[in-house]
Image 1 (cartoon, rainbow, N blue to C red):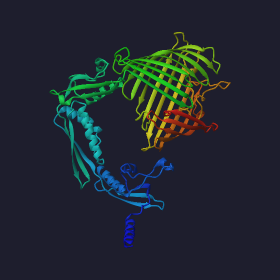
Image 2 (image 1 turned 90 degrees about the vertical axis):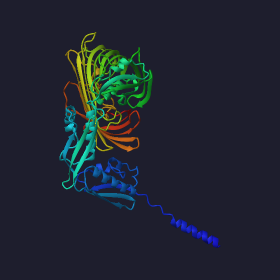
Image 3 (image 1 turned 135 degrees about the horizontal axis):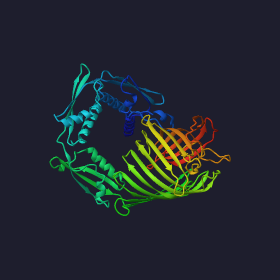
Image 4 (image 1 turned 30 degrees about the vertical axis):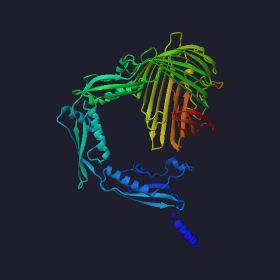
Length: 599
């Protein structure tokens, strides 16, 4: 009995010592008070305690983040440190929490910023070297530290990096930058001295190319932007590496200045390359509500006929393109390194609502790759077209069988930050073509298209994407109209999404789409996360195609609005869009499944 009582008392004491599980607390909101200089967004970015924001609040099925007070206390220290790094001498930061009956916690962070330090004087100190002085003076306007403005640690580091880069690009690869900061607490100001130690001026030494490659060394050397004896430049090293890799022949390219092997003041440079496999086969299968089942394959043969030449064969099929075979023979670095010559025979069949056509021909193109962000082209193509079926009666001036002889030029600037999921930057595309009579063709017209896409990051997770696109096509000979297959048609998965494919167009008396000679369209999408790989969009499109060239009529635009879901994948988003005409057109639903962003 005594043993039983002792065991019973022991169990009571044990369970009494075990704490009762507290209610899981959830974070409802974080607010800031008193921060006059630094924004709420800046301060929240320093914290791990982050509530739902923006569109996330509408996602009711996703739980609120948990609240842990120890994490919040660490966040307060982070904010205090952030204020100090931004020039504030004695910030006072406190917090208070309010808990609801449901366990939802609201946090109020109260801030007394107090005074901050301003930059009183900025001094650049360097040896009495005319060239170094010239380099630093030319960069002084770009230095982030500005007299009279608030002192920030980041500005010091950015200024040092700018000056060091300037030295590296102008023959001083061993240069270093230091700083000395003198603080006047009484007047809340400081003097900043940036100390420049340039080191010995250096020059490019010998160049060697290493790596087992079928590509001739002579071809690789075409892309080198420096020569032995020239002043050393880190910028030229970087551009050389980018240009060699941009040829599309190598798995990797590394251009290394061998600073440990410097001889006198000459730095030897080594280019190391690893080539891609000689044969590459890529294939894919997909489905879209427009194209239906899609099949595609691309066979690439590198080092075709020896050297750096490439042969690329593309084959694909879908509902609107029953068959397409496109071959490109590429001779890179013709005439000069960034210019490629492309010979491009092709054959395809198109099936649209208003016509079916077989197209057979070829072209020659000169493609210029100026940089990662800018490219241009100059081309000539000749093709024979056979209109198999058309819903509209065509005048005698255009034959069902006709030839086209076309000169073209165009360019693209792409400054977006991501090829698949851009959130900032822009894309500009301009293309102009001119069809001339001759070679059995009486077609004589010009066609021009311009497209501008902008991406605006509204916050960490919200992006506004906008597009405006216009085009015109004009017959030069009054007796000849523009070909139906070259005209403008709007509507579909990547155009006005409230309508079916190519249904926005001037129509004949019998209701068949004729295509427009003038086109204008615009779109806006608000893109936001939903859950994990799922993202949502709210969008609106507007546009129209008109029969006469350069006859825009803004009062005659069609509008649609809709919502969409994006599923993120490594090869781009899978896109589902629901849209309907609005404003002046009857309400009807369109649904599209496709791959890639609308723009």
